[in-house]
Length: 124
Image (cartoon, rainbow, N blue to C red; front, side, top):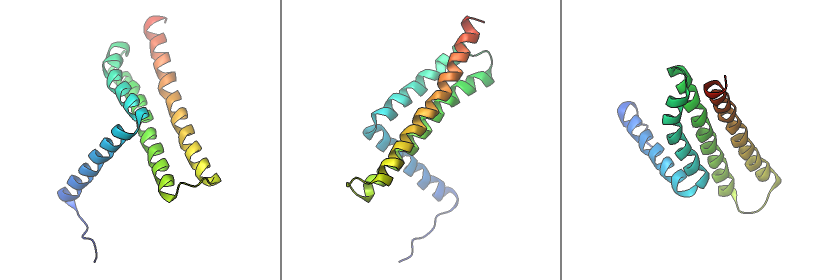
């Protein structure tokens, strides 16, 4: 039986439900996601206090959001690898390690931007 393809508002509604389910799964299953999401929420008032203009605020918040996005992708990679099977395989290790590296590299972005913003606010 062929699955009916949704379009328009029904497709948007289905995609929104899937995204909320994904958020719930990440929240329940990933401590790193909960920590990074909390940091995202905290970054909003902090950025408005530290930044010098609205564009700067957006850049600081977006840099933290980037880490959250990469964390979600890393979790998706891990889930797909785990779905394949529990046995150890070198390619599975590489995929998971590269996903982890992506999170670390993404975390450097807000680290650099927030340090620069703090320097600009307090030392420049």
